[in-house]
Amino acid sequence: MTFAALLNWVEGLATRHPLLVVVEDAQWLDPTTLELVDRINDRIAQLPVLLLVTFRPEFKPAWSGAHVDWIVLERLDPIEAAAVAEAVAGKRLPQEVLNEIVAHTDGIPLFIEELTKAMRDLNVLVDAGDHFDLLGSLPAVTVPVTLQDTLMARLDRLPPSARHAAQVGAVIGREFDRALLASVSDMPAGELETALSELIGAELILSGCTAASPAHIFKHALIQDAAYESLLKRRRRELHGAIADALVNRFKDTATAHPELVAGHYGRAGLVEQAVPY
Image (cartoon, rainbow, N blue to C red):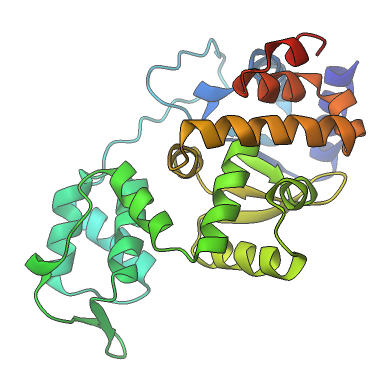
């Protein structure tokens, strides 16, 4: 019934104007969502709808038909990588900095973006109007050599409150409800608002909303992973338990609609008996 309603909604929108539907990282879709994407693909063959799905090479969808095109994205070449870095920086970068970014990122767009931001955060670049100048010698700067290192370095440079908000949000999930975050983090409202603003300003999370309240989503799943991995395992278990308790006791509508969330958090907290009923 839900599938039928969603498909009719998509079709109804498409009859009024062309429609773009974007699904990112399809390799991580749960079976139900993947089935919905399959059905949308089947339904839109004769409709003015562009269904844009991104996924890693190991994901092998069964989509076919004259309306289906496959585009393989290659890694960026050095010129393209440098252009992305300068677009992220907002102005021209010293050639020495560009060389480092290109050499370390292997043409991976997300890595280029994050390493450029990490270099900016190191305070080795001086704004010189239409370009940046390098302050001091680049070899003296510790350049993160992996994407995970880069993301961890950016998280480490956040103010403590912003880092704490990111960590709790990461335990909640890729997308996290602001009210649930406030409940579990125990941060004063003003401090939490400032922390979220800092995370948005750092381009680590994006603003959004759920049916119930404002929400946020990590810009990329790897950013969520880095924030999650920055916590000790014991602390992760504590937070998973606190999130499950909050869902059961204070967010009952969410717990009722999505019991798998409660079960998942109790399970990751090591509280198997509490997870079983859900």
